Structure formats: C-alpha cells, structure tokens
Image (cartoon, rainbow, N blue to C red; front, side, top):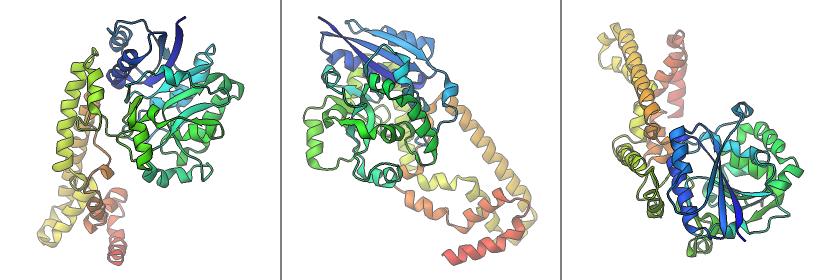
Length: 398
C-alpha cells in the first residue's frame, strides 16, 4: 500500500528555481512506495513559475499546492537582518492550521538537496515531541547570539532548515499563538527570527536528529566526529549561510545542487544568475572589498572633501558647493543602483563582515574624515558648532 508524505516550503518568486532543484532531488531519491505532496506557502510566486513547479518532468506521481497567506499577520514581526534569508520564512508559523487534517509534516528550506530517501526522516516517531531537528553547527556564531536568547545554558540550539513537525501536538498546545507571541516579545534579540523563535518556543520538546539529515558543508562543526557522522552517509545536504551553490560554484558539494538544477526548467535562468553573481563576487572580493565600500559611504566622501581645505585654503570658498555636488551625485548613484537591484536582486552586496579586509574597513570609520562627514549628515545646520567637540573626541580616541 502506497503512503503519502507531506512536505512544506515557503518562498518568494526569486527562490522558485532553487525550490525546483530541491523538489527534483526529493522525487529522484524517494522510495516509490511514497507519494509526495508538496505544499508551497506563496510569498509572491509568478503564475509562470507556479506552472513550472507543478509540471516538473520527473516521471513519477506527485502533487503541488500553492497556499496563500494573510501577510498582515506578519507586519509586526521582525524580519531577518541576514541578506540570504527571505522574510517569508516567518510564514512557517502557520503550518499547523494551514492543513488542519494533517498530523505531521516535513518542513524544508530550499537551499538544500535530498541525496537520500527522505521517507526515512518521515518515518521517525515524534509522538511526544513538537519537532525533530538537527543541532546547529555554527558554534562560533552561536556564542555571539544564542546566549542572549531565553534558553537554558546547556540547551543545544537547532537549525530549522530541516524539521519534522508534529502538527497535531502543535494544535493541541496552541503553538501557533505562542510563536507569534514570542517573535514579538523577543524581537530585539532575534538574529534569525523564525529559527530563534522556534527554538525559544519548542525547546522543551525537540527531538534531536542525526546530522545526516541536515549535513551543512559550509558550517563549522563542533568536532571531527560530528562532521564524519554528517558526511559519511548524508541524506540531506543543506547550504546554510550566505555561501549558496548557485552563487559560489566552488562551495563544498555544489556539484550536487547543479546535478539536480540541470534537470529543472529553471536551469538556464539559474545558470545566468550564477554567472552574473560569480562575476560580482570576484569584483567584491578583490576590487570592491570592505575598505572600498566604506570609502564609498557618503560620510567618507564628505569628510575627505572637508579636510582637503587644509591643503588648499582657497577651497573653503567653494566648499559648500563641492559638498552639495558630492551629496547629489551620491544620491543619484544610489538611486540607479536600487533600480538595478529591482531587476536583478542577486547584485545585492554582501555584508561588510564577509570580506577579508573587514577590520581595515572598521578603522576607516574611525578616521576624522569619516566622523566629520557623518557629523555633517546628522547635523547640517549646527555642524560648525560641533566640529571642535568631534575633533577632541577623535584626538582622545587615537
């Protein structure tokens, strides 16, 4: 007798192609005794891409359903500050009420592929738990933010990119309401809003899965034993973090993603975006590093022009006009770049701390030029009266 397996995702239109690779990988590896039902919580997917996802040419039975949500429910919830995380991830809070007839589901991020049979994950018993997940493998980062969360000190924080959820128990204990409450209550300390909130809300009843179900090749593992466990026989490979295989073809195990991407109707589109992004990465990491980006800040440009008066006293006569010109050119440049981003979101720059020269960039922000420029932006009308104090503070901090 064939069994149904219920798998949820939440995406916007940008992630449609990556979702298709994930779905193909699941369909390719899943035991034929199972019929997969894919539920895609819709964060703005185009009809064209919906049709592509519905009719993947894989040669087996499967079903796809797109689910609209009331976005007003999330307007007061925090969004992620991480550029690689879309705000649609919060939609998973609704999973227990979207399909009230289901008792269990698998919820997945789309930056992963199933290289093993996902039915093995499905058959794990979680009757006494809210959720099953793998402990997070970013301890260096965990020290900087998870200790701020209202969690026991010895609690093992989990990564929610791969979760097996007990929907029945969520409904019995009104977990959906608790998720919304905690997300709002702890908004100021959440770095990964949906994941942090799930940990805070469910930590007392989380079942820990083997690392094979969420093997994260671009993360730092706690020890060699855990790394060996994850990659000795990985069932799911998850590129958690900003280093996605479609952006970085040299990312570990990227060939697994591209193996499935080639089988999707999105392949040419993904490939084109990858070429564009890879070219941008080369530029960002060589020519346009963190130092160059900070030097492109308006504060630095204005401050540098102000200090240039020291070398040529006559420039003070045209300084106001020079500063206005710098300001206008900067704003126009930013506007043009924002318009370009609308047509190609992949051109969005990486966070400064991802560059090798990040520490040097921080030093520039302490330059007198940067501080004077920043002062002018914040206090244009009282600038001349505040210069002396800023200069004294800068001298004191040298």
